Each structure stands twice: as C-alpha cells, then as structure tokens.
Image (cartoon, rainbow, N blue to C red; front, side, top):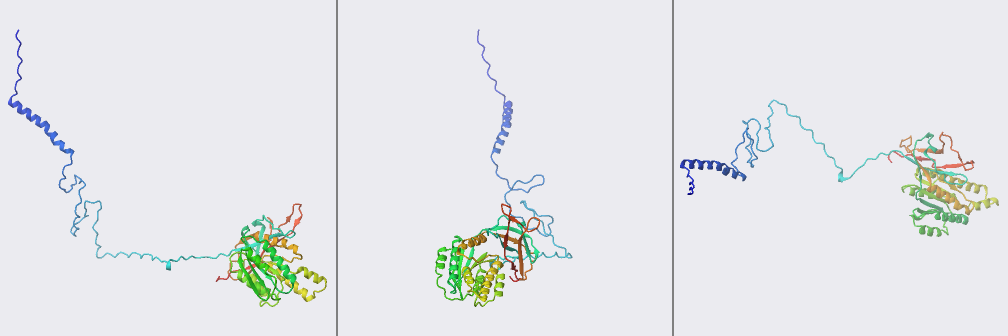
Length: 418
C-alpha cells in the first residue's frame, strides 16, 4: 500500500496578503502612539484661557500694562488678587471729612515712673492690758472686747493683733553729781535692763546733766553697751536739764521708722532747762510711735531722809512734782511708771517692761473724723463684753481681778501739706 503524500500549504494570494498587512498595522499603530504618553511631553506655548477650559497653572507672565481711562471693568491678571479701578469723585461731591488725628503719646521725662498716692487716715494704737496685782499681760482678747472713743465718738475697729517684735529703744539716763544714791540706782536699773536685751534689739545710750551726751548710737552689739554702762562712774555737773534732754531725744527718734521706746531713768527733777513743762508735753503729743517707760531713782534714800525729818516742805514738794512728771510722760505715750523702793524690785520692773514692749495689742481703725487739720484727737480705750458692758475678769477661783488698759491718750492729726 502506497503512502499518500501530504499536501503543501497553499500560499496566500497577493490581495489577501495586503489586507492582512493593513490589519496588523491598524492594530499596532494605537499602541505605538500611546506609549510616549508615559513621559511628559514638551510644554506647548501658552495660550489664553477660555471660558470653557480653565487655564492650567502657567509660568509667570510679565505684569499687564496699566489700565487706561477708556477701559471699563476690573483689570485682572493671572494671580489671585484683583485690583479694582478707583472711581474718581464727582466734581460736585462734598470732600470726605478729615480723619481724626492720632492721640499723642506722652512719655515721662527721662523715662521716670510716677505714681499717685492717696493718704487714707489710719490709726494704729499700741494697747497693753495688764493685771494690777501681778502685772501680767492678759492674752486672748478679741476685737469685740475693745472699745475706742475718739473725742467721745465710738470708732469701728478694723483689726486686732498681738505684736512680738524686736525693740528699738533709747536709755536716757540721769548722770549728775547730785547724790551717789541716785547714781547707784541708775546704774543698777540700766544694768538690769541691759540683761533683758535680745540679739536683734537695737539700743542707744544717752546721758544728761547740764547737757545731753550721746554715748552710743543705735547698736545691737551688747559688748559696746556694757562697756559704756561700766564707764558711768564720775559725773561732771550736778544740774539735771531733763526737759531739754527728753526733747532732743524725741526729736532724734522721730526720724526713725517704726515703734520706738525711751527708757527714762532718773529722779524726774529739772533745774535749768530752756523748755517749760507745757512745751515738753506739746512735744510728746506731736511725736508719734514713741512710748516712754520712766523709772524713778532715790526712793529709798528719800524715804529715810523724810523719816528723819531731813526733807523740808519745798524739797518734798519738788520730788513729788518730779514723780508726777515721770508718771505723766509714761501715761501720755502708753508706757508705765515705776518708783521701786528696793533694788530687788528691779527684775520684776523690767520683766513687766519687757512683756509690755514685746507683747501688746495693736488696734487699727479708720477715724470717723478724717480731716487733716492738725488737731489733737483724744483717744480712750476700754474693754467691754458682748453686751457692751465693762469687761469683768476673774481668776480660777472666781475672784474678780482688776486690770489696767494702757495706751496713748491721743494723737495729732496730719496737716494738709504732710
């Protein structure tokens, strides 16, 4: 059996080959044209935007020419800001009102800062409440327990507090050659007060006879004060010009801020002072923030001389007047007066002074009379209970206790120029 030969593939005809070639070109042409879209084409030249097609972000163009008068409507560029053409005012329109001038800025000369201060009258009273028998300070009182009368008018107390602060004091000592016993009492009294001082207390020492002698200014060095007190052994004169010495001391202490104290130790006699008692009392009234504690000397020797009949009527009257002067100075300033008979009483005397100085009530109020007329206002402080009656004190056994309220008897109001 003979094998059948395979037929040969027929060759396409020329027409069919042409149609096949055109079909392949038609299919490949879109692919060839679409491939270059993957790379950014070259930027065509800028064309003006139309309303149908918003312009793409074009490169910066040179600014358009300035608008002319015959152009109407807004002038725009390719940026986001639109500037409208300013309208010229009509010829018959009223001109606009001028703008208000800017408020001038005033500067202080040389860059200094100035302040305005308004003085509101405020009165501070240092008040001590002490038991008459033991001379102890009475704590625990409230604002409702105090009553203040200024020229007979009740005052509203704003605050009450207890002050415990260091002291600034002057020891004003009578050092004259009138009697050794007086000098001896003065030395013991000043030494006893010296031992009650604390490290933060400031003390000045002044003596007086015919003149005033400042031995040391205010210092907290106790060694300096002790050395000065030991040097008081031989006096120079026998005269005692107490008024002049106290006046000068008040004048010096008035220049110091804060509360000051004067420990006046002497007989209280005055011989040849230029000032009178009335001027001395006026000076005490006019000096604020000063409390005087007076201690009499020579009480024991005077008692002995009086018992032996060695003191005549005039001499006895002279010493009684001296005691009354020392007591008046203390009472006017809210201080205390002592006239110890024996030296053993001095520790108790200065313990009372120390407690009175370091433990005291400070009452603050605004006076109802707020005039700055320079007048002297009399002040009276008393203790009352919740119903306004005088306050009664009693001990643990229910026995009534007598007490004393010690304070200034008044103050001098400011003048308008102060």
